[in-house]
Length: 443
Image (tube, rainbow, N blue to C red; front, side, top):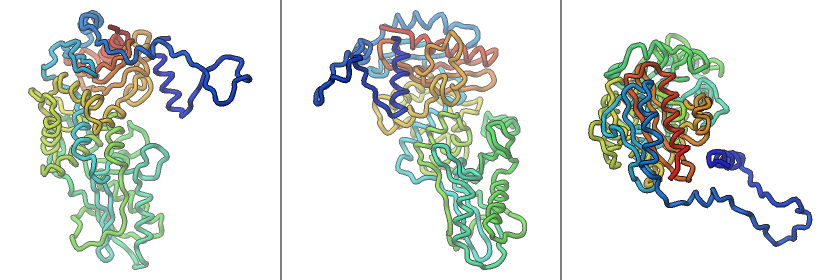
């Protein structure tokens, strides 16, 4: 049985929470108190192999595929996770546009700096007959409670708690406070089309459904997400029987106000898992601003980029040539090296348990997140369920960085950054073939 198929089989059993013992057909005569001998497949013995893959074998598997014209200009590196030995390199220290693989750096920074930080809070403050809806940066806030994991906060729950806390004092007014973040609407290297095209909302610490005006990842976004959240909250309060009159307006919450209700986001690790799996740009920028405030930086694009860079550098990641202007990778001016990406991955998989949630958030080839619809074709199907990697896509840029177990049971880490690509779909397929070659490779 191929290792990839065996690992998928074992993973499925583990996910189902079941344990299976396969014995011979004559089980009715099995005596209590004894254990049947189980033959362990040889491939499981090889999982503990100490043999490091031969770099020449890796090079033979990758060199031709890395010259695929679909990849334009490519830089990449492959490292053995356990030993740290470099097995393949092509311009491994060249700064390249990383697209959403920047989120690996944001994840590492957030896990290392924010592991003990409380979840993000959306609150309601009362001053007389006026309620203030205060955004704390939880862009996962939803209109209504959902059944997914992780469980996110909802405006419906916040309205219920507010109604329970407000006595019968007559008509109320509603204001909303989105002053926790500041700075320009667009980062350096961002296009205004990102906002109109739905790649990201007009960033605000007060958003509901990430600013989307309808269900679905491609739904249009509100021009003013904070005001839209306030309008939705007013409707939720009215549904609870409260009289809310007049226009909703922006305002800074008075320090003399009384906090009467709040809802909390999922934990920071759970947010990071969602960010990586779905390549959530709003969430990446929210975490960047949380990092900025934690580090004493302004809650802006620049403050977030500085906070992420400083935190990752302190982890020992080689940052020469790395330059960030945001926390999501949407900036076309961001630059990251393959070496830096693989160093972050190695921290998460081998030497720093605090960063374990980073690996947990990587999409699984052919199954989850941004890799759910890939690794279906004949040339890459063998790596489905075996490769876990963060994707990156911008116009002319495609990237893939993650981990794979080869046929000898070695965990390999890789990062491939491609620029000047002629078209995204062929470039994605070419990157998938590179990762598949690693899955098929051996000592």
